[in-house]
Length: 381
Image 1 (cartoon, helix red, strand yellow):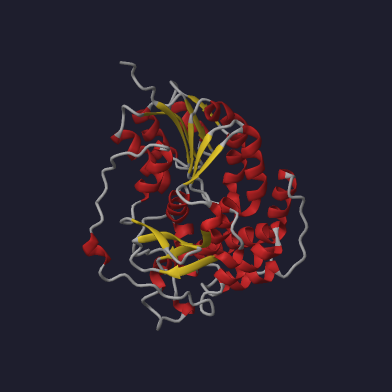
Image 2 (cartoon, rainbow, N blue to C red):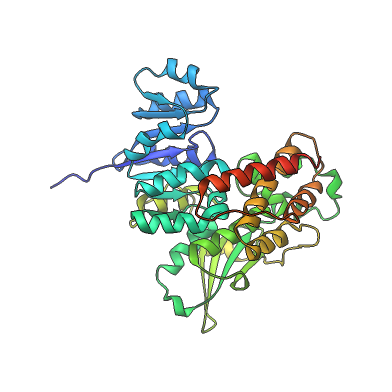
C-alpha cells in the first residue's frame, strides 16, 4: 500500500490567530501535513519557538526581528522581505495567508503566480485587488480557498449548486461587542471594549472592524469578488450566536445554510484538506443549539461602515483601495488612543470623498495609491 504524501504547508502570519490555529491542525494531523515555511512580521520570540517545534526549512521575518531570528535558527534559511519569501512559497503545496491588512497583497499575488493552493484568511487583498488576483489565479492555475468562516460556508454550499439556481448570498455578523450595549455612547467606546469580541478570538484590528461593522463590509466586497455576485444580491444579517455562518437563497425560495460552532479550525481545516474533510477536534453542534437563534438588521445609521463599503464597491477599485487604506489608518489611530471610536467612519468617509485614480492591472499603482490615501488620512487627525 502506497503511503500518502504529506502536504507541504507555508504559514504566512504564523504568530497570529490564523497562524496559531493552522499550526494546531498540523500538530493534530502529523501524518497529513508538514510545515516548510513560516513567516511573521515582528513577533520574533514566538516565531523562533514555532520554528523549533515545526522545523521548517524556510523562515521569513520583518527586518527589525531578522537578526534575532537568524541567530536563533541556524538550521533554517532565514530571510526578510517578500522577494526572499519566494523560495518558501515555492516549496509549499498549500499557502495559508493569515497576514492582516494590505501587507498580504504582495505575498498573496506571489503565491498565486506560483500556482499554489491558497487558504486565504486575508480579506483586504481581495478587497483592493480582487479582479487582478482572480485573473492571475486563472492564468497560473492557482486555487483560492476562502478561510473567513462566512465565505468558507458559502463556498461549501455553492459547490453543490448550479449558478442559475442562486438568487442571493447571505453573510452573517455577530454584531460584535457593542450589539448588546445600545445605551453606550460611541464616544465612550475604548479600545478595550472594542476588542472584546463575544464569540471569536481575533486580533485587535479585526476585532475593531467587527465592532464598527467594517469587517462585514470588507467581507461583502470579498464575496462579490469570490462568487461574482452583485451588491444587490448580497445580504448582511446580524446573528449574535454565530451558528449560521452563511446561507444561499435559491431561485425557488429555498435557503441552504451552513452551521457550526464558532471555531476557525473548521474553515482552516476545510481549506487545508480540500477536497477532503478532516475529523476535526472541535466541539460539535447540536440541534438543541438552534433553539434560540436571532437575526437582526444591521444598524447602518449607528455603524455607517457597512454603508461605506457598499458605496466603495459600487464606485470601483480606486474607492476600494481608499476604503481599506483609510480604515487601517483610522483603526490603528483608535487603538493608539489618537482618535475616538466615532472618528473611524468619519475619516473613512472623508477619504472616500476625494478623487483617486489607479490602474487595476498595476500592483505598483495600487501600492502608490494606498500610500497616498494613508498619508491623506493621517493629515486629518
